[in-house]
Structures are given as structure tokens and as C-alpha cells.
Image 1 (cartoon, rainbow, N blue to C red):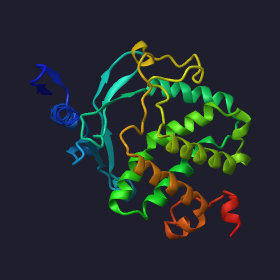
Image 2: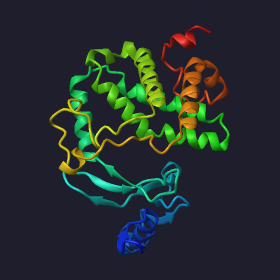
Image 3: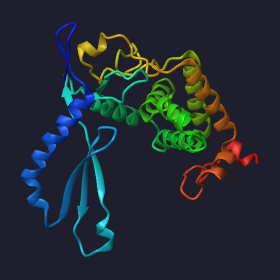
Image 4: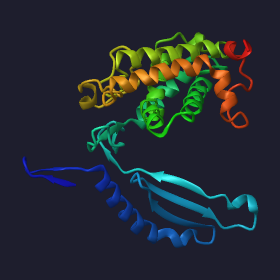
Length: 278
């Protein structure tokens, strides 16, 4: 925490909380590490981005069991109704930012959507392909543009746009045979949001009539002003991302060839009118 001299109030700094959390977790780890020492080694690290990572390395005679795993540990402050405050990446202006995390509400929403979508729904594949397009296009940008591209099209922003489309589209429209059309819709809705300079948080502030009644939100969250996920980005950056997004979709075959065709899921088992045209 930092003391704000002008108003004599305390303000929580995400970086300070992460460093405190790292030290506290180290003490906790020391108390039970011995219980697992014959099966795996446990260690902690604090990254340059102030992220606390737990590393697990199995102890085994089998080569396949020597694969280590890293788990990110996130300190969270409970609000109510299963919502939490978690540290966010610093914004463009370097402020100390906290964001509201809604694990319970998101799980309920996804379960509700799964219950109404077709059994062969393409909604998950649609989100996966959108992330692949973002990653492939970002690999060809310089460092500064790549950081802006990844910041605007963060995984949370893509998931927000995806959920909004899911909630505003008839369930039958997500049949697997409509994959390319739904991906086209998702990219178009993203560009429209970029051009209007706003992608509102789905739960923080909310949208009346869009969420099912089963998704309960804390009163404080429902009454707050809708949060724009792109408020911190300049018009120039949003225009760049919008233009780049259109280019990426229209030149998808070229991106796949220049990217990593041996690893990407794009083009495998997906009959795309843009790929098939070449």
C-alpha cells in the first residue's frame, strides 16, 4: 500500500500487493513442501510483470513424467456473490489498476449457454480460431505495434465480444456448419466496436436484458457505470487494430503460410471460403 499525502488515505498498489503475496506464499510453501519432496520439487518465482508463479517439477524415472508445469497464483479480494478484485496490468498512463473478476458468474453463464446451444455447436472453435488469427497477425508486427495489438485484443476483450455475440444470436445459428459465418460475424462486431471506440464489460455495469436471470451480480457491480475495456487506448491505436483485423481476415491464407502452419489449428478441417478461393 502507498500513503496518499494529499488526502491522508491508503491506496493499494497492485505491485506492492503482488510482492507481499509472493513473500507470504513463500512462507506457506515452506510449511508443506516436504510433503511432496519425494514426488516433485516446488518453487516460486516473481516475474518482471510482478506475477507470482509456482513451478512443479515431477521426480520420476520415466522421461515423460519429467515435464515441469507452471501455475500462476493470483491474490484476490472478495467482494460478494462470488466476485473478486484482482490486480490488472498497468494502463497506458501507468495508473495502479484493479479489475473485478467474476468466476462464478462466468461459469453460470457458460453453463446456461451450453444448455441452449446445439450439441455440435461451433462456439468454442470460433473463439479458438479468433485467438489464432490474433496471434498469427501479431507475429508480423514490430515490438510497439505488437504490444498495442495484443493489449487491445486481449483474451478478455475477445471473450467479451464473443459472449456478446453468443447472447444476441439465435442458438441454432451456432451449428457447426455455420462456423465461418459466425467467425465472420465476430470479426465484424469487433471492428464495429473498434470504430465506435467502445467494448463495454459484459458484467461490470452490465446490459439490461442481455444476461439471464440466473447470473446474479453484486448490487455495487450492477449499479456502477459500464466499463469500457478500450477506454485507455488512443483513437490511432484502435484504428490501427481495426484496419489490421480486416487485413488479417481478408488475407488469412497468406498469414497462415507466413506463420506457423505446422502448429496452428487454422486451415485444418475448416472449409473457409477465403482459403478455398485460392
